[in-house]
Image (tube, rainbow over all chains, first blue to last red; front, side, top):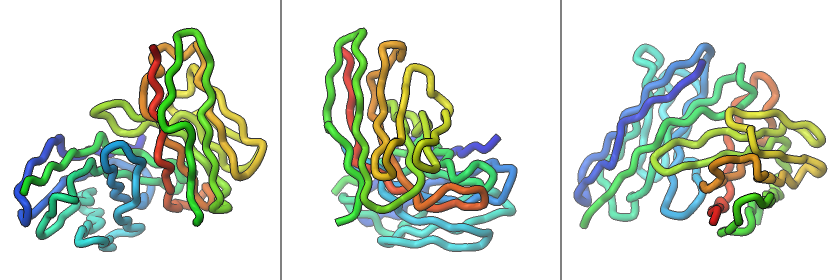
Length: 113
Length: 116
């Protein structure tokens, strides 16, 4: 079956540091890949997505590239801010699973001033 | 404004009681979903509905029930059969979920349920 593995947190960074959150997946089909962000006490917000190999999703300074050869979708941001402190979830949706999302466990990111 | 609303934000329940969590969307989406989130874990799918009057069990449906009488509404009932119901519950919707579709899911703000 489908699965998503992402790096464990918490990840603690200083403001303006470079952020990378690793995400790898296993899927039988050709999935779409997503990054969602959850701020404390809130629901999930879509951060970015990519629907086919070599696509790059980007939003709010975050980027992730769909790498089929390494089955990865790592999230990066060049210079984080305190407001980026949140939990980040990698997820996939496979055409054969009727749009259902398979989530990773989430990675908490803490950015300090 | 279009979006997904969930109510209440916080809910307290005594053991042995059934409670119903509300989820409403005005996005005209066909598909709706319920997830459960526990600390340090990803989201797990409870139930989903692809169309009105139809729904399917997700990965952890035991102790839960749903209905989909209207396109806009997908209430979740946590029954007394659910052994460990304390969690954060999230509702989501997407345009459709027919085979071959991988549409983005949009999430509500969540309901935090605590069993006393």
